[in-house]
Image 1 (spheres, helix red, strand yellow):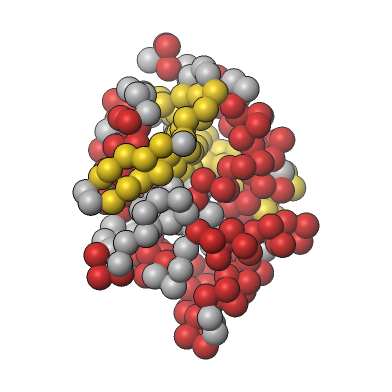
Image 2 (spheres, one colour):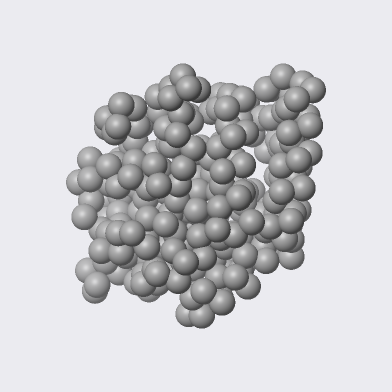
Length: 267
């Protein structure tokens, strides 16, 4: 586990395994923990580069007055981590709001991305904003741990994982996360998506309010409009953005099959 200093903040990252590198980009609050259940399978075939956004998880927590809520900032942190890890080119596996950063990174630094998995969301949605309004009301009324508990129920991971998920939410962030989340929900990166050139796959689970038939899942249609060659992979039994948690084996196999079809050595 290592630290890279980027614009007055310490960004945590970790590199393990061997083989073609895969950089994971978790959601704003789950961070690298979102990939824990697929990590064992992934690291057997790939060099896995894990990291956390600034002010999230194991990266440095800055005073709120110094926080910058922007996708651009995250993109530059992501590049710094990739540089520090010694990777010139990598596959990217992103999920949930982490997909905003990954897509923008792929548009800005196409030479660094061999292939990209993302969640499909690339513009504001009515469902996303309604969900934020509910969370904001909870947050205004209760403390941060209670807000986290309500978030887990809204995002609906498998009940077997709820007890695991809530402490991760509490550990990885604080109340300032609400502003960061709103920044992502209001972002429209369709122009960035159109500018990408790497092989691209939208992957999501088929269950729960964030599943393939929800307003979040409608990002697949937007992805097709922006990049008609985008592939789709539905992880059966996976819950929305938690498909790599409650359907880990299927998710890992589907992701690695996509990476294998687009080897870095052939680029």
